Image (cartoon, rainbow over all chains, first blue to last red; front, top):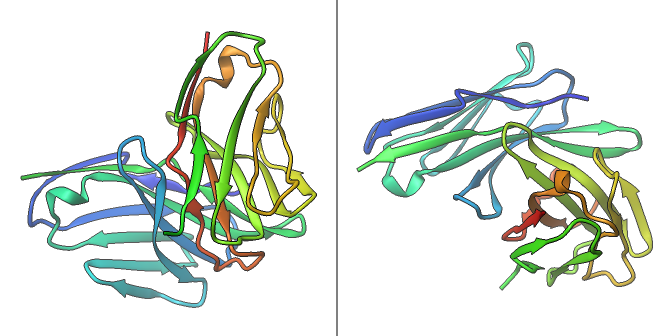
Length: 113
Length: 114
C-alpha cells in the first residue's frame, strides 16, 4: 500500500522563519491531509487538500499538491515557538472497498525562540 | 467539548496478562479506529469499525481484538500481551465513510509490556 514519506525527518529553525516540509506517496489518492502532533499527544487535523486542488491556505499554513510528482508540501510561515511539534501527512485513497488513511513517519519541527 | 477519551493513559504490564484499553467518543461518530505509533514507523492502523457490530482488520491486527457494542465505545483488547506490543496507542474517530472526514484522535495510551 502507499506510504506517505515526509522529508526532512527533522527541522530546526529560528522563530520568524518559514518552515517547509514535504510528503511523497506512491499511488493515486482522493485527498491528502496534514496533521500536527505535540510531543506524546494525539494528532490534530490541520488542513486537507483534494486531488484536484493544487494549493490551499489556512492562516499561516500553505499546502501544495503535485499529483504528477505524487508529492505535497506544507509551509508554515512566520514560525513561532508554539509551532514546535511533529507534522504528519496522511494520504487518503480508496482501497479494498473503503477509504484508507495512510500516515507517514512525520517531520519533527523545532522552532527556537 | 468534542473529544475522544482513552484510558489508561499510561500502563506497565507483564507478558501474558490480559488488558483492555477503553475508548469513548462523544461526537456520535460512526467510524472508530485504533492505531499504534512506533519510532520510524509512523501510525499503523490496528482495527477499525464502520458502525456498531461492524469491525475490520487494519494493517497490524495480530495480537489484538476489538468490539463495538455501542456507537460511542471501541475498546482495544490485548488477550496475551507481548513485549513487541509495547507502543503508543491512539484511538480515533470520524463522522462516517467520507474520505474528507477529519479524524479526531485521543490523547494516546503509553503501553509497556515487560
